[in-house]
Image 1 (cartoon, one colour):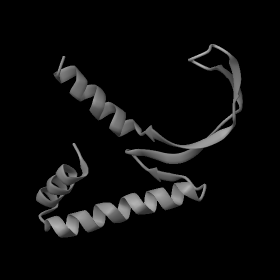
Image 2 (cartoon, helix red, strand yellow; image 1 turned 90 degrees about the vertical axis):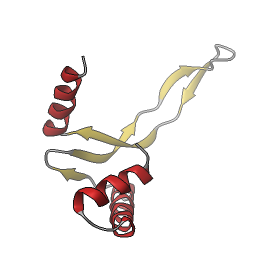
Image 3 (cartoon, one colour; image 1 turned 90 degrees about the horizontal axis):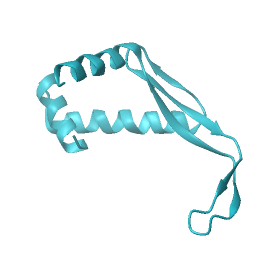
Image 4 (cartoon, one colour; image 1 turned 180 degrees about the vertical axis):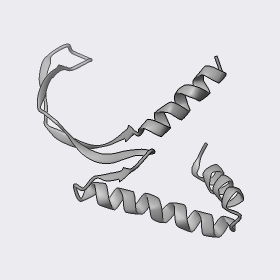
Length: 97
């Protein structure tokens, strides 16, 4: 599903216009991005948590030459699914097996 398909599905489910659904979804994504980029965590009970995770400096290998190299420390956005989200995915996976 891409954003356009998501907008259409939300508009149908909420019985609102495509424009209103797009505005709301865009605002949600922007707010999540701004909040996590500022270092804060967003927890949506039952759905999941968006947060920043730090990755320590580590040693790796250049895949081309095999030479050892240092991979610098960095931060990255992360999402952890909540209990209800995980249960829904597992239940759907069992139906499709």
